[in-house]
Image (tube, rainbow, N blue to C red):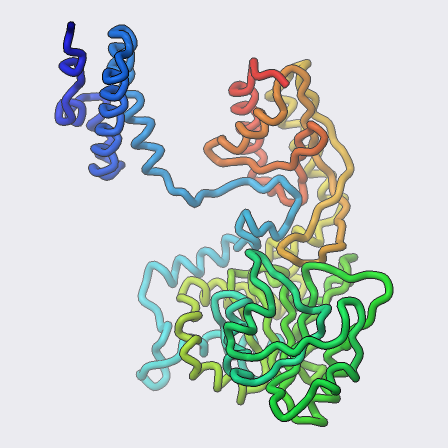
Length: 472
């Protein structure tokens, strides 16, 4: 019986072969070697399984191609760019808010050079990384001081740990929210060392409920904005302005978690009203926390703003070092916040705000342009490309009831599988993420940028070719 194992190529021979050695110019040697060994072992297992000689020879003939494919796949970054055609503006799974190119240039300048991250240029001594954001955040929000951590859950945890550790914190039962990733206010509070005292009912909480719960162990009053859901109907809640009356009467710190953290009144642009950070500060709230990568439109951070005495205590909390942000985040946040000195510029330059406030006229114009480009490249009786009215979503746990009118390009397939087509769009070298509804594929133009039109056309052509013959 012929020894088929003798047919297996040697690792060194493959590494030096013309079809493989050029991989070493751009792929680490280890990844290439690993790919070679994996493919050889795959053939070895087939020989052990007594596969026919013809099949083994075919596997050996194809081994160069398979090695290249495996090595190149392993060398690609796992985190990659995608095109968001879903219409969900602040899409948590797709990275939430976008950073514009001007801000990226600022980050690049900081990232590729040394910076004064923790160096005081005036005194020539060690400085604080938070000082770079202090002036701009306090000027925009009206707070006395600020500190920035890596997300809003960390912000709430740090605030409660600093102000109310070992004490009771009173919060409305209707505000015991769960945020993304199953993080819940009660659990965050437990980790902080504070004791939760919930008052009222799910749908109704009154000022007297808070007051009746106050005692010598009360460490703070907590107001949580339910930014990711709404309770409708027979409801009642207590505004932070009313809670400030108790704050004054009992000298108890008032904390408000705003969640999304909007800095402009979006109702002026036809979007549902959302309380701004500035309004909370004006109502007398001692400490306000909010996200940076939701309605603010910046990088992922948790921003804490409020009375200086509390912020200074937080800076001394050991958790602050664990939650601190890096130079890239500080650079991105500072550059984003500078737009807010001019509201019109913020709306036009911050991608999240621009998408949310985009007019139907502009969306319709974009939709027609993209439709024409697609039809220039794809003409097939089995594929219909048409335009439909639809609704976009804000996303990111913000404004859950808000439906933004939009236009979508809709692809309907007759001779191939819609699911397989959508799968192939996601497998394109720049994955294209769409909505699949009632066996149709939707491309929402609110979240598609003009510079992505060519990618979508190429992706459609790719998916069309890959899905041919795959029936419904």
